[in-house]
Image 1 (tube, helix red, strand yellow):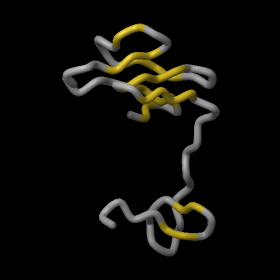
Image 2 (cartoon, rainbow, N blue to C red; image 1 turned 90 degrees about the horizontal axis):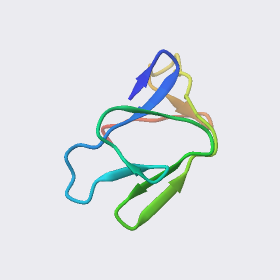
Image 3 (cartoon, helix red, strand yellow; image 1 turned 45 degrees about the vertical axis):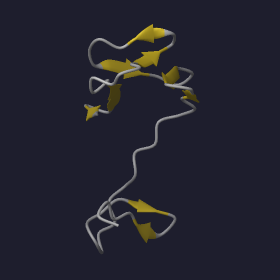
Image 4 (tube, helix red, strand yellow; image 1 turned 90 degrees about the vertical axis):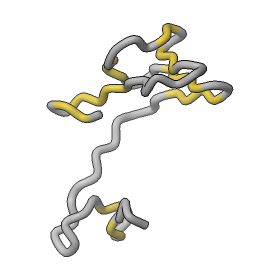
Length: 72
């Protein structure tokens, strides 16, 4: 979830839980560069925040000149 330029993580009542820096998420938690997110056997290290800019041609986020269409 993105709010005021900050990115937040939440668990959607998963069986195994979601962990941020080793602590189980109980509420929305802000994530920062260097944080560790664990979901089951998968661990993700946050390297940097990326917020794509909108492409004026299609009104969708753009990456490398292509529109990112969430419906595809």
